Image (cartoon, rainbow, N blue to C red):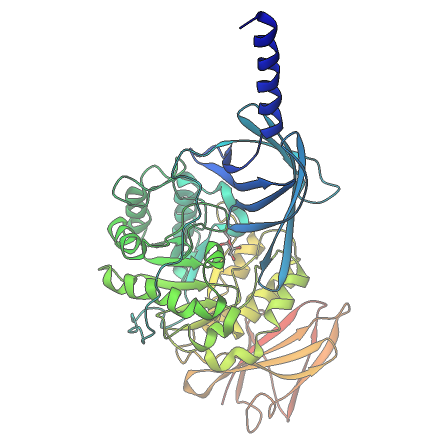
Length: 503
Ligand code: GLA
């Protein structure tokens, strides 16, 4: 072959190479999280006839590509998914550069571009797990736990992904020493982000570098006379994109038992990509059964944001508590929207099985002390789990006083476990009442308005035949005089007056 022929063929070959350059295949973009794991985004792409189709998976979300323009030399893809009733969309701009896919994405159109580099996934990696057969429904035996609503602490509201072994030990130390343990707080619960990058060779769950030895940590928490909780998901991934328990339910329950875990929060998240809301009972029953078989009493807390009327089946799948709403935030608006919406769920709460309007935000700084007193009072009227969500190692005196108000805690922990209800409402003013063991009642006067105001309650509304013989103001820690068919108190803006009354 002449030199010019070789040259021409080479040019032709290169031209063909470029024109067939294609983004089809499985790609993984890894962002190290600093705990020995990475936050991975998977791109399963197919390029044909000027179009790119496929899926994008990041943390708990599996998106389907719905729009694309361009090709390997430069493309934009838009992918979408349904998150319950809400559509979510992501947009990536990218191009093929040698062996890499260089990508950029924005959380919002005006947000800065986050740059990613994806590499071809090794064979067998990057494919999304498939559905597993679901068990027939049966009634899971009661584990005998949570005769009163669980009390303790959870890492998520304050620490989110920053929780580690030292923080959990510090929280346990604080809880044991500052009066919280004496007031009834017992569980120290680690939320999402303790998990390792992947399972070990035998499929056992591993921890990431923030939690070097979970058994030792559990031993430490137990040595303080406290109990320890952990978190997982029935899906392949947790909300933060760590390993979930999908297909490893029995194995994980045994691992938790071996570590000495006393409480599991089980968060739907990644399961949404494989199962429908109608299938939640069967999916949750799997872990309910697994925990009973694990050989250690483990409180079972369902977290699926109140979907599919969980209060109707949560107890049957072994749940000791079930979240009734989406995530709380440390604002008056979020806390009251959740708390004051719980009235219709009252019939479903009972000893061993509680409605859970989410963890406390008391002391996290977004509300005033009056607002936090409302939070504590309302949750106690609701017989809700009391899981502090602040940094117990460094809290103010007023925060500790709110969290450890034993008279209010006694309402939450009443042994009859009857959830309180709204008995009167006039504009921003609400009266709630809760029957207690032995014929007493708790009543709470809430002022959701912008100005202090007198609020009047009628004993008949609160379920009493006549004025009670004894009444105690649970925030003033003082007995109050009552006579006649009504009681009136001036309630601060966003505040509460809470009484325990006895015949
Ligand atoms: C969900 C839950 C939260 C918390 C986070 C952790 O949003 O509702 O309570 O557990 O996941 O990723």
